[in-house]
Image 1 (cartoon, helix red, strand yellow):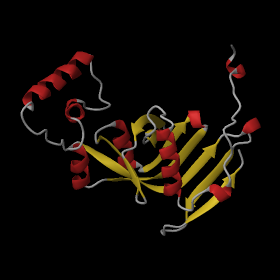
Image 2 (tube, rainbow, N blue to C red):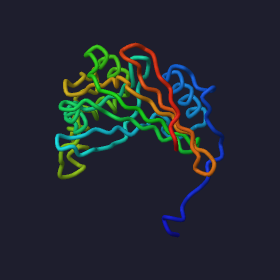
Image 3 (cartoon, rainbow, N blue to C red):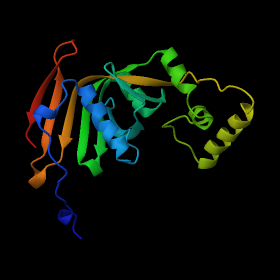
Image 4 (spheres, helix red, strand yellow):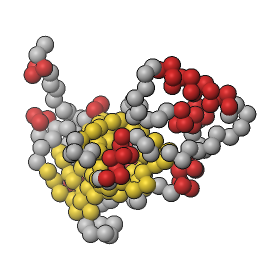
Length: 213
């Protein structure tokens, strides 16, 4: 089959202005709850896009770990490619692809580092395997073989088998301060519904506009 022949129509229903909540975080939480209830695979998975010093965009999948009116939160190695990008350019884009619901959400904003207390609270809530992996992996660095990574993990597992695992200084989180959020609902005949919330000044007020598909 030709790639140009692969398509489907979107029939799950539209999105109307009257059905939108005034606060985009409330609207996002509603859609996220519906994605979870629909038992989508990895409903909190989001594409995170950053840009390097040469203007080259990079994308990767990261899990959303919390959300409130202050922003979207994720965690990473602070020496990773994405973190190094954010040192020079803290503008960031998030994308949630909920294909079975014929929905997408696109977020733009700026990334700010979380406090040490926030990092510690989440790190200690993680499974021990995840804590150890955070220490064992120098994220985005080149390694010659998987065995090196596995060996380091086993070494750390033995070292901390009877005690608490310390949070590494090179690990932490970011809060994305939202500038805009777009909600996309698939429509029949490619007449999709798109609404974008844009922050008005520094206040928690939002302008809502419909975008052409």
